[in-house]
Structures are given as C-alpha cells and as structure tokens.
Length: 267
Image 1: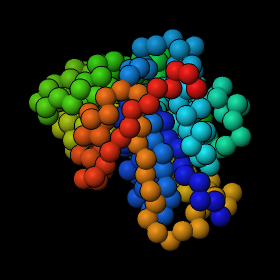
Image 2: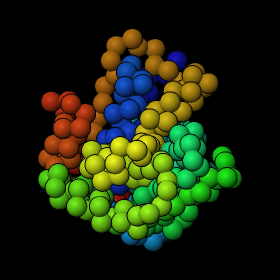
Image 3: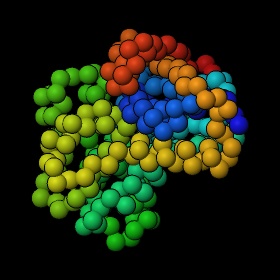
Image 4: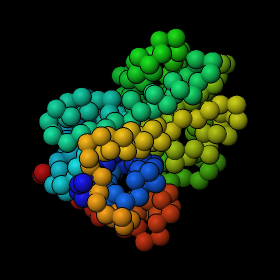
C-alpha cells in the first residue's frame, strides 16, 4: 500500500480531463495536478523548450512526493516523456499510447483521424502508435494550433464550434469512423467536436484509457492507497489561479475547488 498522491501535469487546463477520469476510476487516491498555463500553448514551441518546461513540472510534482506521474498532455508525452522518464524513479504514464490503443480497438473500417497540436502532429506519435497496434489502420492527422489557446480563454459555444469546424476542414471527404482528441484540452469542448463531426463518428478521449492503465499499473506495483476514504486533490498553476479554478470547478463539478499559483522556474 502507498498513500502518496498521483501526480499529473499539463500545459494548462486540459489536464482536468485526465484528472476527472483518474478520480472516477481511483476514488480513494489523492492527486496533485499542475497546469503550466503561463507557458501554454506547448504545441508551437521547440523540442528543447517543451522538455525544459515539462521538467519543471516534474520537479514540482516530485517535491510533492508523488508515487507516479501522468503526462496529461499529448505534446509533453510526444516530445518530453522519452527523455524525462529516464530521469525519475517513478513510473511515468503518457496519454498517446493509451489513446492509440483505444483508437485501434474502436475503429471498424480501419480509418482513424487525429487532431492535435502542431508539435504532436509533426512527431507522428499517434500514427506510429496506432499502426504499431494494427499496421492496416490508415491514420489521418490534422494540426489544430488555435484550439488549445481558445479553450484556455474559455470562449462561448458558437466560437468554439466555428474554430473546430475550421480545424477539421482538411479532413473533409475522408472516410474515417474514429476521431481521436489528440490534445487533453479538446474533451473540454467535446460537444462542439461531436456536432462538427456528426453522430456517425466515434470520438476517442484518451483519458479513459489512461485512467484504466494507471489502475492496472498501481495494482501490479502495489501502489493503491490503504485508505477507504475519498482522496484529497490539490491543484496548481503557473498562470491565473482564478481562471484555472473556474475551469476546474466547471469541469470537475467541485464547487469548492481552489488552485494555487506556483513559480516553477527556480526548482
């Protein structure tokens, strides 16, 4: 048994989508989540800069004595995880592997579309992971640079919908049956994606599979908390704590959710 918390990191508020699934799957576990909103988006930064920023969040979580770390950010998973998982003792879990597994299991016609940040798309991480699981699957990728910053700014439904439609326009005419939300911000506007895509397309949120994989790892390694009480949850951001808290309360349904601002530059 291990009563230390689970650590999660993201470039901003998108990580709340993974936090929610982890809390639902592991209600007795405590969590510590940090969103690097002061430096988002990550999707237009260099590889070196993404690794540097992600390392800061990892160091913060290690100070919180976490027992494992979830990269609740597709860009950080694609770019920084291969480096940083060799720098820490804790198990590191990413979203791309989990999302790819879910997509490969979901598609019936073996045609999958993925929308993500430019860096994630340019890494072809989803394409590699999905085709690793089934080489016959055709993977179509589209970069959506405007969506994550838009979601952080918490615009209205119609504004979000218009942006989603613009972002997925390059996929028009492609006969895919499965669509992967390749940025953890995107499930925050999943309704807009559903309207833009239509009801014939299955939408994959990698967070579902991440939570299940985390459960499996913790069971394997004996990391479950000994408590039968509900876990405690801490939220931190490098950006505006009020905006961060507002999004967390809205998405997680925690009326008393409060986040704290931290400076990770000198860790």
